[in-house]
Image 1 (spheres, rainbow, N blue to C red):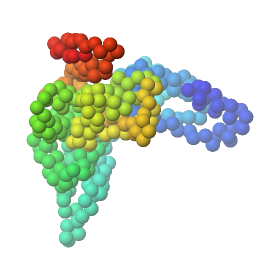
Image 2 (image 1 turned 135 degrees about the vertical axis):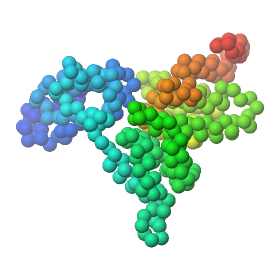
Image 3 (image 1 turned 45 degrees about the vertical axis):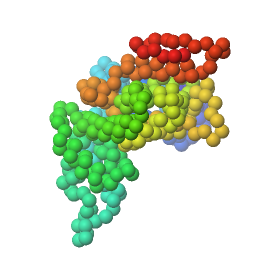
Image 4 (image 1 turned 90 degrees about the vertical axis):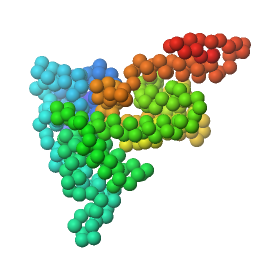
Length: 347
């Protein structure tokens, strides 16, 4: 950071004078610091900012950092932390009421979905003000919940009006916890995943050899955790994970079919050095819209019957890797039988 940012700015100040330094943008925005997978890296970045910019008064920068209060961030900001007293800390969940912003956001997005009005021009015909208020109340002041609601309503496979009725039914039937601001979000996640699971399993009934390869929850979690096992040198495209986890191309499309309000695929910018794409191949990677969905799937107290232990996913990775290797011809045409997790696999 010192080499890339601080030293060039210092050189500009000395060579071009203070007026040249004023032309440099002064605000650096870091959004989603908590989504860095390694908490040590989060702490390392915060410490680098302090040492390079806060402790050095000659640089003109100000940092605007948005993050959930993970351990590294909390430790830096709490009394005695190295950023306490030098950072202005705004705790949105405690001190900021986002209700008005969420209400405005929901109403505008609903109007954009079906911009039709009642015959008398009094307002939209497919939702009411009470519907909006029920959605606003259900978000518990969490914008991530409002955004997830809108993505669910925006799915092209169903009518927004019908999906709104479904949402309102889910909200009314859910056992929300007033002490948990994500209780409504958990209800929403549970309903979406359960619906997607039922649709996937209905399609899988046509298969006579159904097994782990058709275990929707296991496959969902296996795809979800796959980015954790990419090499440092770059990403492995989801198309390769398709062949490893399911043995068929584009298998992820079946998993994501009814989860598009929670997850999607994006183009890979940097592939692993071990992957050489074919001409015209568009490598993709999995993208989860918000980390709270990953947290939900990984917390048994929240996901309940939808929970799949991390160890179960690792076992599945191992079994599928052995099976995949077994499909590759051995040099001497040898075959063997290996046992892993109580299951025999021909290799």
